[in-house]
Amino acid sequence: MASIAVTAETFGDTIKDNGIVFVDFWAAWCGPCRMFAPVFEQVSESHPDAVFAKVDTDAEQALAGGLEITSIPTLMAFRDGYLVFRQPGALNKAAFEDLVQQVEALDMEKLLAESEKS
Image 1: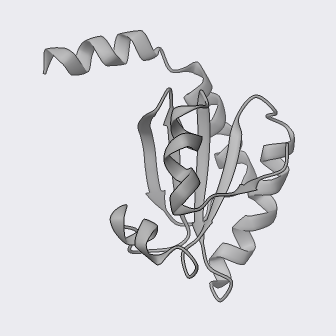
Image 2: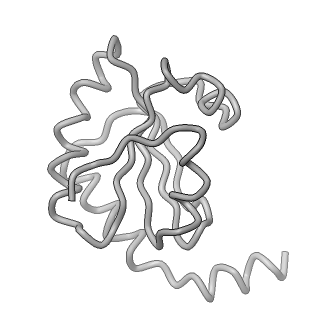
């Protein structure tokens, strides 16, 4: 599956309505963003069960600001509506593939139970 563009209007539903969502916050003028873009697309094609979304921080300044995006690219991963990963900087393909596998393998019942205890 190719990546999809997400806006402030569609961000919440995208996170809520899909099991696994990776979000790339980027801008056209950002060199590292341009380097990460093909990696993001390649990995998205090998994981059709996950949603790969992109947020143009120039076009969606209110969304980026609300999520406290201070450096781009920033990658976020959501699982069952919960933020499970957030990191600025571009990943190489192997590191991103590893991250996808880790998010897919998360035991969400265990994580939610542990978070309720604390």
